[in-house]
Image (cartoon, rainbow, N blue to C red; front, top):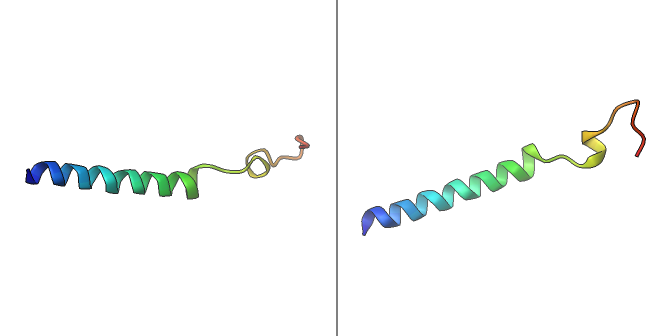
Length: 41
C-alpha cells in the first residue's frame, strides 16, 4: 500500500512539474515564435 501511494504522489509531482515547464518555458506565442524581419502577421 505504501508503494502505491508513493507512486501516485510521484506521478502527481512529475505531472505538475511538466505542466509548469510547458506553460512557462516551452510554449511561445505566435508573435514571439515567428518574429523575424521576413514574416508579417
